[in-house]
Structures are given as C-alpha cells and as structure tokens.
Image (cartoon, rainbow, N blue to C red; front, side):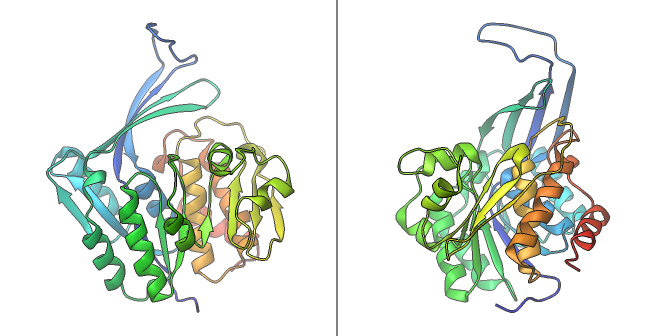
Length: 309
C-alpha cells in the first residue's frame, strides 16, 4: 500500500507499569540479597512498541485498556507526552497491568507480568478501533492481551488492506488463523524455538527459513542482530552494533516499533531492519524500557545515516 506521512500505525496491546530491581546477582529460591537500585517506569509490550514507533516518526494509536487507578492515570499522561492517540484506550474495573522486573549485573532480565486490565479488552472494541482509524497502514499485536482480541483486530486490519505485525511474546501457542492473518512474524531466539515444529533454535539460515515458508519472518538474535526471511524465501542478516549492555528490558519492543514505523514509511524491509537493530542496540545501553529508547532526534539520525531519508 502507498506510504503516507506520517505513517499511521495502531498497536493493539498491553500497557503496564514496570517495577524494576537491579542487583549484581539475582536471588535464588529462598534467598534474600541486597540490590543496587529500584525504579518505576512505563512499560507493557504494546505501549513500548507504540512509544518507539512514535519516536521513529509514526502517528500511533494505542488500542487497549488501563485501570481506573493511579498507574492508569500515569500511563495516559505518558502517552499524551509521547504524542500517542489514546482515543481507543479504554478504562477497566481491573487494575492497570504490572511488570515486576529483575535485572542482573550483565543486563539480563527476568520478568513477571500481572495482566490486569490488559485482559479486559473486548473483541468488539478492538475491531471498532481498527475499522475507524483513518489512513491506517500497520497493525501491531503481541501476546499480552487475549489472543482472540488480536485475531479480531488482525482480521479487521486485513479487510482494510493493512500490514499486520505479530510479536509472539510472551510465548503462547498461536492459532492457525492468527498465523494466517500475520504478515510479519517477529520472534526472538527463544520464541522462535518454541514456535518451530521441531523446536529448533535459529542457528542457521536453513532453520530460520523453515519456520514459515511463504511468509515473512524476522528473528531477533540479541547481540548478533537479526535475520529476515521474506515471502519468497530470501534471507538477509543485519549485525547489531557492539555495545556494553546495561539492561535488555524492552529491547525487542524497541526493535519492533522502529521496524514498523520504517516499513510504514515505505522503506525496504532490510533497511527497516537495520534501523531497528541500531535503535535496539542503543536501548540496551540504558536502564529501563521506554526510558532507554532513542529520542526522535537519535532515530532520525540513524535513518539519515542509512540513507533512508
């Protein structure tokens, strides 16, 4: 579909408050240790992807729900400050979603999610949103909302001729219909192995190409960058810039938000992937999820350097 400017993206997904503890070594079962730092921040995979897509130049609509509580009000204020349209972000009687995050000295994390209001999104609400957003080009989904909601949103998106992008995280078995409605499937290494029929890790081009023949896939490979398989089976790889990781929380969401905005802008998918790798590499050098993401100016500079603008 022809690109518009700014490109228009809808994210059907989760919003949450991140409660993050940092420690050199994380406690084992039954162990108590003293950590280094505690922070609160804005998160939820859907919200993270929306924020990064906005910073990458897209006009973004957030479709979901938050609680009628202090965290929900803060989430709405944050979206407003990020320039994200919340016309289709409803209020639930359930609490706003929460993510408890532990980060060790190497920047690796462990996350426990309490979905709350994110599991209260109704199918009709999501469908109405997708049918109503003007000039919509891309719809992004994840697995932090009820899967039937994502299916309905993607069905409506495809009826409009939109591109659909699914981040299958946190992993759960995906319905045949959802996979058929998904144009771009973007798992990380762990999710790839869980999705693969033989549970094979993405250790070769052949294995990566075998996940979804005839459909587009990008697998994010952490410090090794990302690999893309297009619908014709052609494979391309993009290395990640070498950085010292501080906190990997939200890096995958940073990748997806950047890639989606770049793709909606009309860029070649391999160039969009390269931009996404660079933005994600910046994010792991900073603490937090959204707080670690490149700014509008940093993202614009990356796109200029790639010759994408």
